[in-house]
Image (tube, one colour):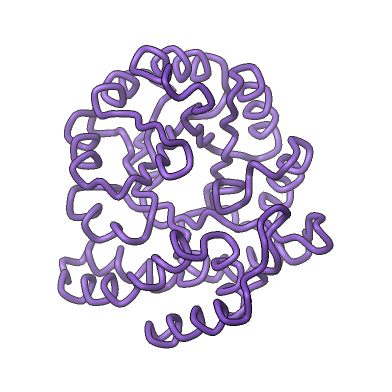
Length: 296
C-alpha cells in the first residue's frame, strides 16, 4: 500500500469532551459531524491534545468506537495507543484495531529518559510493530517527553514493513527534512504542529497532525491545498496569520486554551480534565483577541 497517498493531508488531534469530568460522547459526536463537512483526512483520537494521559484504557476504546460510529467512511482514524509498557501498548493497540482504528500512533517511551537511546527505541518499536495488527506511526513530541528520536533511528525503523511513518512535533525543520530524505519514498512524515506546516510541506512532508486544525480546519486545509497548487505566497500568508493562534493553543495556554478557543468558534471544547484547569477570564479575553486578529 502507498501510505503517502493514504495518509496525506490534515488531521486534527481531536480533543476529548468532558462534562462533570466524564466523557461527553454526545458533544464528541457533534464535533465530528462538523469536521466531517471539511476535507480533513481523518482524526487522531486521544493524542496529547486529547488528554490521553488522563484516560483509562476503557475510555480510550469507548472514544474510538464513538469516533468510528460518527466519522465519514473516508476519514482515517489514528489512535494514540502508545504507553510506557510494551505489553500494554500491544494490548491497547490490538483492541483499538478491532473496533475501528486504522493506524496506531506510538509515542516514544520517556520515563527512564537517560536510557532512551537508539538501541532502546529500535528494540521498543520493533517489538510492537511485530505484534500489532495495524500499521505503526512513530510519535516524537519532545516538549512532553524530553526525549528525541533522531533521524538515524528513524531511518533504521523505517525499514520495518509495519512502521510506516512518523509524526514529528519538534518544530525542527532540519530533523524533519532528514527524516524525509533518509527514509524510503513510501515512509510518511507528518509535521506535528501548525507553526511548521508550510515549511514542513516545503521540505516534503505529507501533511500534518495539527492542534490548530481543531479550530481552523479550513484554514489549515487552505495552506495544504494552496501549497499543492503552487500558490506559495497565498499559503505563506495564511500560515503567518495563524502563527499567533497556534502559539496560544499549543505553548501559551495549551489544552485549556484549545478547548476555550473551540467554545468560541462553534465547537464544543468544555473543560479539561483535572488536574488541568480552566482558563482565567483575563486569559480568555486575550485568547479571543488573538482569534479576532487572525480573522477566525
